Image (cartoon, rainbow, N blue to C red):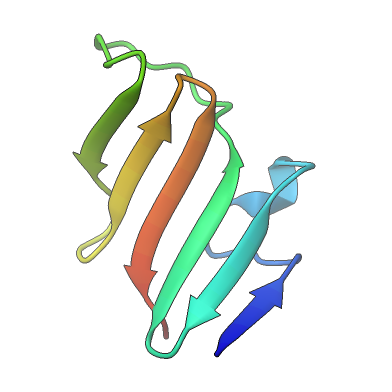
Length: 73
């Protein structure tokens, strides 16, 4: 069962107008527009990096959408 939250401050989503957080049991998935300036080259289709905290995985899809996978707290 998935829970859908449209408000959240854990991923800095208060700055992203079209974002949402989904919770799948003990895991969370944040989806929103990627507004950060990337100073390194990224793959234009799908780029995978470690997150800002331990246990986070960031996926940049089509150089526009940011998907963050993490463990729910």
